[in-house]
Image (cartoon, rainbow, N blue to C red; front, side, top):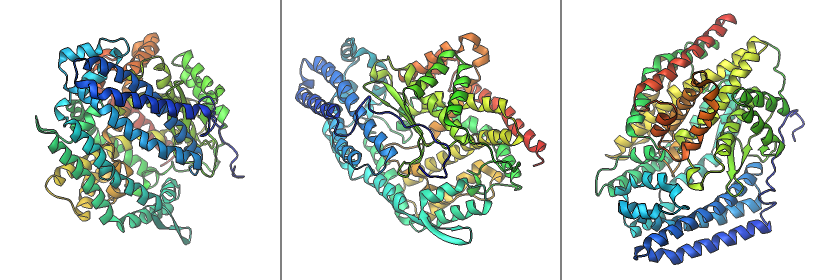
Length: 606
């Protein structure tokens, strides 16, 4: 551990799953998975026989068993690499698993096609099995897009070609971003560093340092603009061509796949974005208040991750991990005693990784082992207030999976639109608790600053990303765009949403933002806006439901894997997501937080 680091969290315990990459149980699970896949290979040819339904049911059961093993081993490898990014054994294991993932996809595509192509009568027979029936929602949800299916041989061809097609472009971007060097003025000297390191400087409290880091990052990406433009044009072109190929029965739009993946309708997406559009004045006000706190009329794009300005020259004391857990547990316990018990159980079982290490990967996440159905939390805990909020956020994710642990595997996965429900809920709980017990103006400013940063990120930055991506797809349908056209499109989107709350746009954001280059999915933006507002909408129902809230909250979380977002909201909250009322009410509830932020600025003379 670095000698300067006085505070860190505990190390997690993975030994309940596997002790190492050579663990006999891990090797046995790989062998068992291999055997299950062999069984599927023998069953697949029988799907077009009179006994096809029985064969399909067998394959479905084998899919769940093999999927559990593949997920368990993959999670273990990922956890090892998170703590030690150079773990040789984990890297080799992960490489081995790539072949299994491809084989898994190829072997279970026939089942997917069988279920999608079957008549309603045959599907009813298929689901008339106690072990298969829990997958009813997934089956019927998938069949909504069955008109897009190509033939089995064509789907196999697409899967094979995509590895060196669209996914190759995504891999190229990852390699480029991991090796790209930028020149950044640090103090009086220019330093060469990776973009990830330079990005960390955007969190600096020093204005000049943030701007120097942003300029260094943008200059580095500017030198690669032709390569990035080629990659993004190719990936979007691939998806548009797939839409064309899948439009044999009826037109397929480029938004059909992302909304379906998120289990929402186009109507809900349009309503959500319209609500965000109507909220622009409030969000821009919050952004201008943040700029005012720094003595500026408008923030530059390099300021968007700036910390709260320092108004007291006393350094905030480090929050020890046990102290953070106690605070979070008590905040969770205000909703229900079982939530506090859960938080303390996570610590007692050593299911949280919070150490400081030179080879740890940045970021934080919650994952889980499919065999034991136990969650794990990963982060680097150093005692800052933001670390406490991050820990509260990830514990929300862990609670979500915990309350679903007894459900059938087919009912435990949910769309990204609902993935942030419990995490943002937990984060808001703890932030409100911190605010209530804050003992200084600086502490109150820090907490409210974080709230405003989230508010402007979700209500301005995310819609700007969505607008750029949507307009890029529309333009790309005619021809590939040149780098300058992409810069112009990005700048227009920033101006459209930020208005005069931002001093200037970020024209290279289309190149520097990883989310645009994730080959496995598109429009990795609007689900964040949905999740943020939906979770706060749920949070606002605490008083209305009173003593019944926790029971209703858990019921809602448990249904996230077996309902569309619209049905979930109607069933548990009695609201319609494709109508503006719920979204508008949630946004209105945030206006008081903007007012509170304005009040603290007045109080400290900013």
